[in-house]
Length: 53
Image (cartoon, rainbow, N blue to C red; front, side):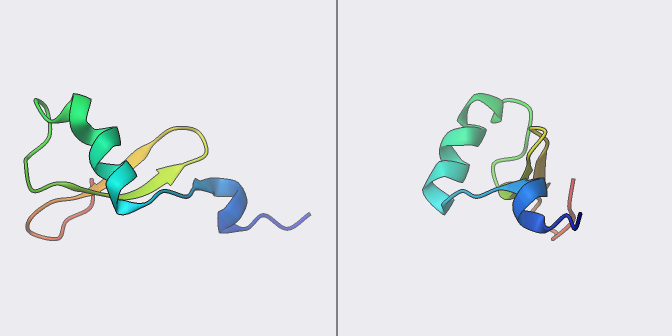
């Protein structure tokens, strides 16, 4: 069986990204943006310097 990004990630729109981060804004920087959501619920964020967390 071949696993692809479709099985490992969840699609979202930029507007969804802002909504998903709204409850976390107290913890993450204001310039953080959502880059990727894993199928296990992990969120990958890009900060203002371009680093992924």
